[in-house]
Length: 161
Image 1 (cartoon, one colour):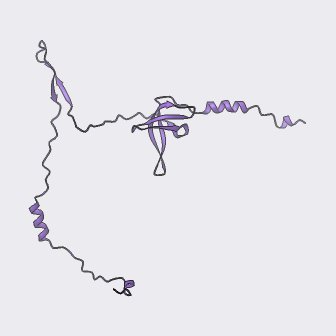
Image 2 (spheres, rainbow, N blue to C red):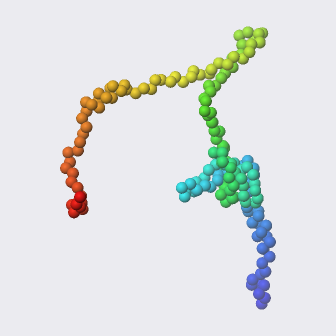
Image 3 (cartoon, rainbow, N blue to C red):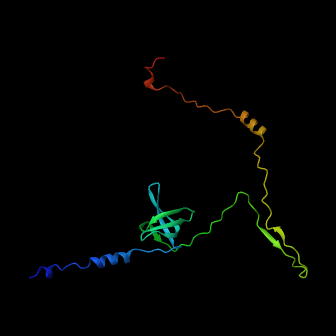
């Protein structure tokens, strides 16, 4: 009896290498992914987009919040969630402007006139009650004091000043 019949020669080593390359997940640029983070020592997943592939396993991703970071493939999950559109407001708010064209007289060429779409928000005078009313209410109500008898702790009985 031959030993090869009981335990055949392993020729599958090269096949395993080829299979492992095929089994590695691949991501393309602009793919939506969830990336793994650790915040306060707890794992959480944030949505992001693949920007660049650095090798077989590493990717540069851009988070929805705007940061760009490098992540390994085992920290990424492909996602079908569409990126939410974010609206950013500038420091000086501007009202939306609609342009009114001269529709009444189609023959005349009139320049477009900007018209504010909405009235500016009304700022109300937000003053509190008058100061004299506060002074009167404070002076008319006496302060409440506790009627409980207080005594010093027993460990201070031996303390001499």
